[in-house]
Amino acid sequence: MYGFMKYLCVIWTLILWVSCQRGENIKSLEEMFVDSQELTHERPLSDDMVWGSPAFLHYVDSSVVVYDNTLDSIFTLIDVRNSYEFLRFGKKGQGVNEFLQPFSFQNIGEGYRMGVYDVFKHSLFSIDLNAVKARGKESFPLIVRDSMNSINVIPTIYNTFIGIGFYENELFRLFNDKGSLKSFFEYPYRDEVERKIPNRVRGMAYQGTVKSNPAMTKLVYAVRTAPIVFFYNINEDGINKRCQYAFAYPEYKTEVSQHSMSAPQSAENKMGFIDSYATDQYVYLLYSGKSYKDMKTKAFEGSVIYVFDWDGKPVKRLILDIPIKILCVSADNSIIYGFADIPEPTFLEFKINQ
Image (cartoon, rainbow, N blue to C red; front, side, top):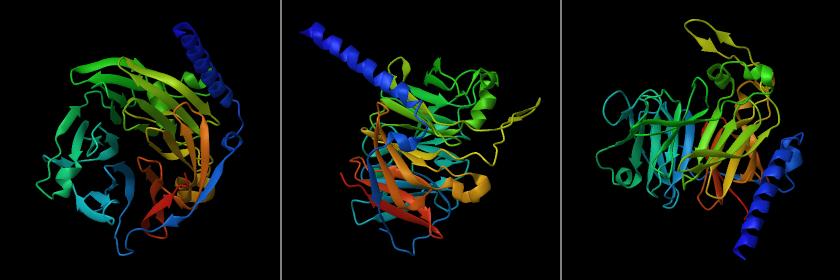
């Protein structure tokens, strides 16, 4: 019986892998999704709530945490469980318990704690939401310092960390508090000609969002400049690619000198996944499909969210009644939170029919 079950597991794994690879040949995202659902927004906060320029969101412990670089207190906690009470905290600066340039929020494995990666300090810090709600002295202890000049750092369940950056040859680096352990993969490319572009330069053209699930066992990398997405499993030794889809590739130039390098994008490129979010069950990809040439800054908004499971199987297309710029999702997958310019930045929620 054990041998038979093991045989079935192998066959099922192969079926999943093959179905994902076939997905790469589908002409569009639209063709993948059979089920769609239209969602209507609600405004749970007072219209008097002032925002500057919200940059990213995170859901943890029945709260939504917002990073807004233009406010005096750069973080806002919205307690969605307690009548949407909110409080603001966190300061920008070079001192202890201050931040130079927060770049992402991260899961760190405990229900009331989360991480924030400061790209200028090359450090991942911890935010204790219970302490924040108690309005005590603000303290954000260091989790790990990155010595590899990563642009983002993602913790794993195995007490290791995954860095993504403009590295010489790879996309990800696995490390711990003692240093680098292993390297994995490289930035995308459409053909062998593009692959000859140095990895760190090519990486500038393929920037995107990297999210882990709350259990910190899976990872998704979604490209902003084109509809490209990779699904990974995290294990004790590193990262395994589970599935990938590439529906188009960006057009760009490379500019490399002795002192600088860049990859300016064509204004005609249709933006891909402008934001993403992950729960333990699903991956949510906020899709633009618009070019800067045609839509200017509206190209960085989306009204369609594609939902995948962690095997890369399409689950549902969510169609919002108003475009948003950033999003997060409740742990039970019942509510999407986001910001839309109508015309000022406004916090919204969309309830999903289960």
